[in-house]
Amino acid sequence: MNVKPFVGVGVNYTTFFKERIYLGNGNDLELDDSVGVAGHVGIDIPFAPTEAFRIDARYMDIKTDASLNGTDIGEVDISPWVYGVAFVKQF
Image (tube, rainbow, N blue to C red; front, side):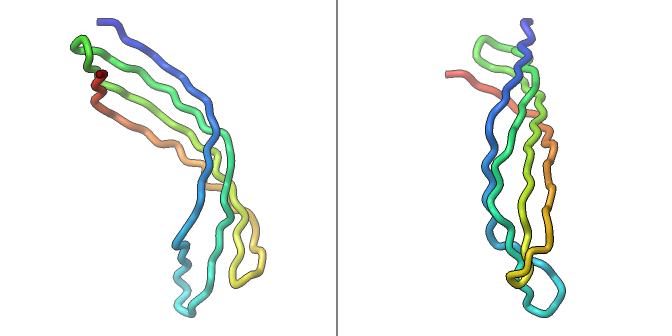
């Protein structure tokens, strides 16, 4: 068995739609698009010549300006870590 670690770096572009704020009075929340760095690390654990089990983690730098009813209310920092487990099939 040949475990294959991997690492990647790239650019993340996030666009928001259908933003909602639940204050009960029809407020309009708006979040600007965001561009930031993204990272990806993990390992593939092969169990057949073209199949593997993958464990990975991804990070996305998501910071955006927010406005409520047209008034700037500051910056929102979401920046999640996303963890995954997957079956990989190579063709």
